[in-house]
Amino acid sequence: MNLNIIGNGFDLFHGLPSSYYYFGCYLIEKEPELYEDIGKKYSFKYREAYRSYPEYEFDYGVEDIFWKDFERHLGDVDETFILDTYEYDLGLENDYPIEIEMNEDLAAERIKHAFVHWVKDTLDINRNYKLINRYMKGRLIPQFGVDGYFLVFNYTHTLQKIYGVPDRNIHYVHGECFGNDDDN
Image (cartoon, rainbow, N blue to C red; front, top):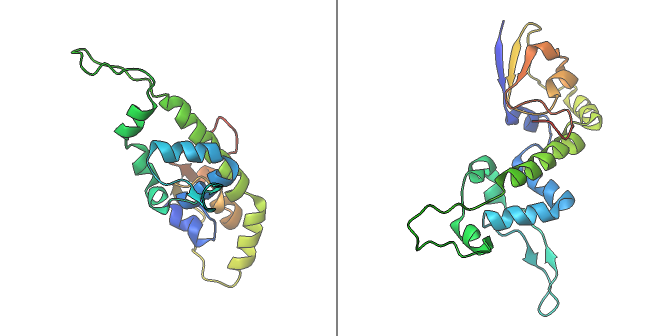
């Protein structure tokens, strides 16, 4: 039995727009308020003026530097954001610990919800797999043994839909996306 470890390069090889950059594009189109909130929180440029003063209109542009390393950036804390958005005097001159409510669970839920819908609505759809099958005909494609086992870091079902790998041979390291709001 072979152990196969599958990462995002596998889906990208098959033409799926599965990088975090494309997740940023999805947010701009479907969840612009969330994209703007993330931009403020992580201090990246999330919109650009495309008309001159006084009639500014804004166009969103994906901040490639942020999205290239999205998972790492989620752990960063921007102190300026905390100070600018906290409504009350922090009382930093006192000697006792200060608790600041950040609503991180709410932000994480919003991102998770949008992520699940991105996978469900744009990546893991039958139309994509039909195009991939047509595109891959006659091309050099990976060959997997029927008794192989797969550790998959992706959320898509490329192995099942393109290669016919049975579900029992696949373990989704980060969880499998079925497109439900409660997917983890």
